[in-house]
Amino acid sequence: MRRKAFTLVELLVVIAIIGLLSTIAVVALGSTRVNARNIQRKANLVQISKALELYYANFGAYPSTGGSSNWHGACSVYNSYPDVDTLNASPTSCNDLSAPSWIPGLTSCGFMAKLPRDPNTSKGNTSNGSPAYCGTAGQNCYVYTSTGTDYKLIANCIPEGTLSASDPFADPGAGGARLPYAWAVWSSGASTW
Image (cartoon, rainbow, N blue to C red; front, side, top):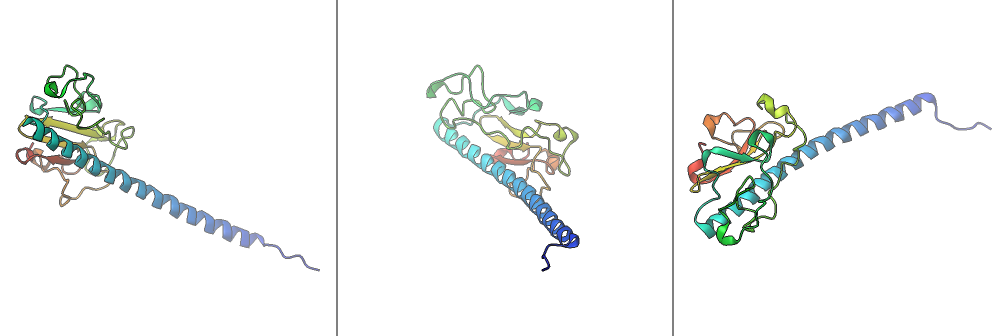
């Protein structure tokens, strides 16, 4: 009686098919993760902008950083400001902080519990068009500037992948210089910053 078994060729074919399918799955999962991080970044920008509008509705001004050329951020390029204000201020003194977060007063006034960080902060981003420093770990972060009257919030050194000029989050500021590597939200008078 003959015993039925797989031949060596059949086993190699099965192993090759399994290897091909697992490679396809890993590649698909990688692009899904990139898309998920990009969606999270846009959601963070929208969430922060809503908190800024609530702040404006309560105080008649946006949290100021001292001018449109004074950018605050959570990454080292922008002085590594903290995610929360370290001073527990009352709502009437939210603008007078001795140790502000990268958006002064937004957390201590109760508009956000903690300011979000980029979902891939610990890694650099080498997307097309990004400046060289974006490839360094920790340079992709959110940055903020405000005169009190207007504000601009930028997702620096992101998105992962290619940014389209038609994307509503594409940053038109700085003469379009940040267009390949930054998303932004802003008040009406701050689009060119």
